[in-house]
Length: 127
Image: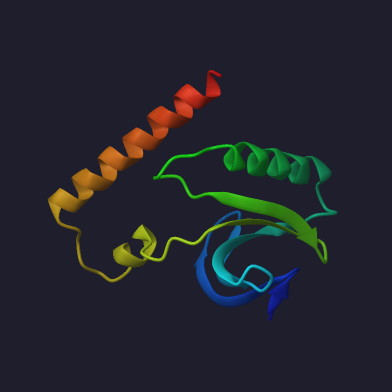
């Protein structure tokens, strides 16, 4: 089981998806909690994929919006590619897996925040 990646100590698996898995982790140098997205694909298996991941991290790191997680960095450690980002403790994924439907007001709030973030991304692409 993976316990560390670079200076980050993995604390808990938060979510698993098609591209990889996201862990809550401790940045042992800066003493803060972060999220680390560790990609499923090994770094040596697909160099164009890794280059696309680096570009994604660079673009995301340039964004500044309250509804978009801040990217702190990315790297490759033991052939595993990863992106380090702001940890958001109250994720929507956890709320949806508890079996209770969200109130309409909360769904509307999430939709408006998503629209705001997408609008920001759209305008950022034009510059």
